[in-house]
Image 1: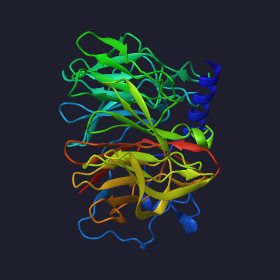
Image 2: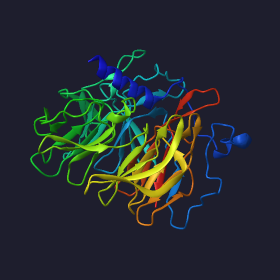
Image 3: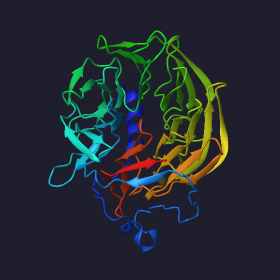
Image 4: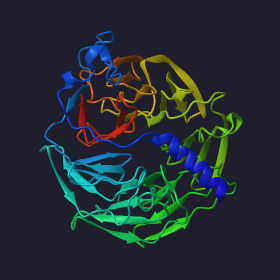
Length: 417
């Protein structure tokens, strides 16, 4: 109802920020941070946190000359190793036209990382921002939800879904989900009664999770013996294929920001206790190789946070790691490297101040260091995906220019060990 729309709209506005659209092309890195760093506060490490030997390296990929400026797209690795990037909030470079702010666009690109090439294929049937995508057993991709709507209108949550077929490079609309969602999670289950089906959960909704059956094309709501908390966010699929939700939307009262665990077999939400007694939001949650979940950074008020905490599903506890980020950040992206180290990528340090560094947290040694090299330009709301090759693919995002406009980006970076 209206309360849900206000809640989701507030979450969307917080994620998207404010300001006009613009465009930034790839220019020499030396052009950033001129005049003593007075540009957009590109927060390089300044040599204070030099990477030790063997640290991951960030490479700015100039061979991908995409004309599409986007953020909050959805990414998935196809069976052949290429990367599908679909939707998001998009502007195209001149002379193509842009769209009104916060309107989802339909463009799909497929990037061949090994060869440094890409193709633009048939678009989505419906523009969507903050959709979720998952690779199905037959090599097709299920793309669900997001925000969308006609240009110039306030976007609304979508219940629509479509299937991308790499054999035809086109999508087809499917039956709608039972619940409209955005910024949710979708995962192919490998065990239990729903093995081979896709679990879909979260996304600014108080409705129960659901499953998609690739064999029938049907979405079926999962029973919830106790209803989920409104707008559970930051969902992570655990090793036992339960889902933990780290926090609820930041505009809820502090006492309502808990963390919850959902058992799709039993259809039960467990309230695991209060996550935080303060207004921390816009952090990242990343499942580690040992099954735990890293909660990194975030923002409280207008300042980024340096906190690094770990959720342990064995006892449902959250505890500080004992380390802090040297570059406090929020609206960053995160992904795990083959070694088990976590890359915390760019983001904002404070309003109008972008970080270009990639912080590497090592769960084995308990150390935090900056990777060799930086993303360009530093940005928030980029998307990151760990590929089967072990590299992390980073695309898009936005940063504030001198006049306070949020500029959408086409840039792509690779992080390698």
